[in-house]
Each structure stands twice: as C-alpha cells, then as structure tokens.
Image 1: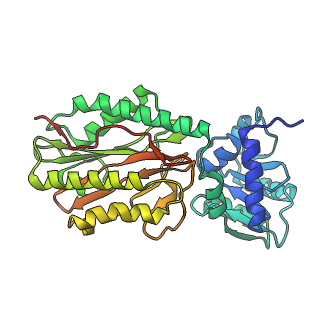
Image 2: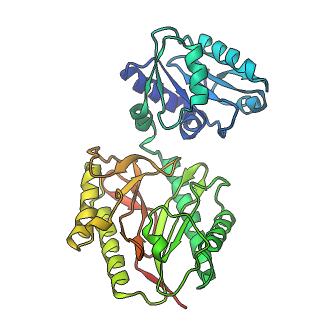
Image 3: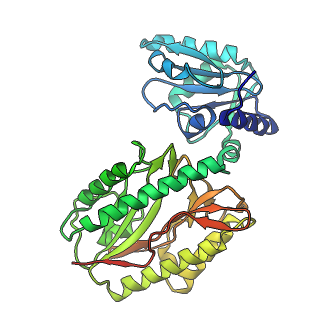
Length: 375
C-alpha cells in the first residue's frame, strides 16, 4: 500500500489540474516546481534533467548517473532513466523515458515557460515527435499558490532569520563603508542566523542615487551623510523564502527624503490593510498607488505593489494593476510600494503577508519608520 505523503497529495491535485486543461502530461526542469512535487533538489547545469508527469502513471525522470542516488530513498516511486558523460547517449535516455511515459504522437504536453530550457526541450521534441508543447503556467501556479500550515511555518522562520540577520548587521554600518562591504556583512549574518545555503536572491544594498534604482546591485560606492540606504534582502528556510525591504537615513534626512519615506510608509500600511480574502490583486495595487499619486509622486512609483512568495522569491499572485485575480486564504505575498527620485534617493518598504480566512497576518515586524543611522 502506498504511503500518503505531501507529494502524493500534490501529485493528485496536479493530475486534476492538467486533466481539466486537456493536457496529457507535464514536463519540468529542476527548480521549485519539481522540488514541490517530489522533494528532489537539483541545480541546473550542462547536464539535462527533466521530470515527466503523466496522471495515474509513475513519475519518470531523466538525469545523469551521478545524480541517480538522490532518487533511491523516495517515499513515492519513480522511474529513472540515466545517462553517462557521453552526450551521444543522452538522446537514447530521453527516448526511453518518453516511450515509457507513453507520450505518443498528438499528445499535448504542458511546460513551465520560465523554467524549461532549450537544452532539455530539444531532446524532448526529438523523442516525442508530433507532440504539442504548450504552456502550463496557470496549472502550476494553481498547484503552488496556496500554502499549507507547514509551508507557512517555514516562511515564518525564513522571515525570523532575515530580520535577525539585519538586526545584527545594522550596528556595523558606518559612513565610508561600501555598499558591497555592507552586503557581504549581511550575507554572513544571514548564514549565521540559520538561512539555507541558497539565498532567495543576492541582497540589494543601494545608497544615495543608487537607491533610486529598485533592483540595484551593490557597488563600491561609499555610504555617505545625506544618503537614503535601501536594503532588500531575504533568507531561505527548508526551501521557502522571505523577501523584505527597509530604508534608512545616513544622518538626519533632508525634508524631501523624510517626506517620501512617510508617504511610502503610509502606502504600505494602506495596502496591507486592504489585503484580505476576496480582494482582487489590482485593488491592492490601486490602494498603494493612490496614496502615492495623491501625494504628487505617482510617476516615481515605477513597479507593481507586490508579488507572491514561497519556494521562489517571485511567484504568483502578482499585485499589479492589470491582475484581477482574487486573493484567497493561504496565499503569501509581499507589499512593497516605493518612490524613486532619479539621481537623488529612493525609498521602498516591503513586508511579507499571509492571507487568512478573514484577513491577513504580516510576518514581518521590523520598524517601517525612516530610521536614522547616526554619523
């Protein structure tokens, strides 16, 4: 008798989703979705790996021999097709796997548009001749978008680790240190606090004019008096992510810097208060945007209000103006309005939120006021 596991339930739900979409199979590269379905964790490399999912059929995986040991103690059975180091053997492994999975001519195969590489795709196309490969983005999103209690606990821990790391880093900030030096200290503190080795993303540490670039990379610019300092960072715990942003002032802020920080804080609060089951994603975005628009800085809020969060730092639902998706219990997302004044300074405040049956819980609790780092 097959033991019930979280992966058993996830595979059963996926089978329903793809059958409702008139798909015959789903193929996945290594990444969050493959790990979510199986517990298997691989990194993308020059050696192709692909998981083949067909409803009511054993999972099938193609992978190099050196990775095969990872599949030996799985609670859910899986068919394994391996290949050696000679690339001329790879085609045969894919052919055998496709044949075993009974993906024949005319079958409709779903793929993850942001995940499937051309490397694996070319082997799949050669082995599954005359099959139609189409996007299964909606089905995969539906599978992963609502988190269970165990997933939320892992995300709560990822938030705690990230906040602990920042608290340990703040006393180290001194005028004259570079953004790159500060980012390095933060990474060290993340690992010391207990983050998984694979961070959700490299921390953004941007000061002064660089803080007006929402996705700036740390540079050798030295942090100086009068700067606003944006720190966007996160931790991973058991494969689940946190993603937080806070903004600081180096010395007493100027009038406009203090003003935009206060506006962004108000926009963040308004959007968090509007986040509840039954609200549409674009309504949350509108609430944040309206606060900033009415303050006269609308053209400087140049990105969406937030995004989903889970095994990836960015995943559905996306909190943007064109998304009419309803927010449901179990969804986890960020609220992160910002104002960016080109060649001057920028502000962003980002929180991590879990949707409950009757509202929302904010996992992040670091101060949102513009904190001053003394000179």
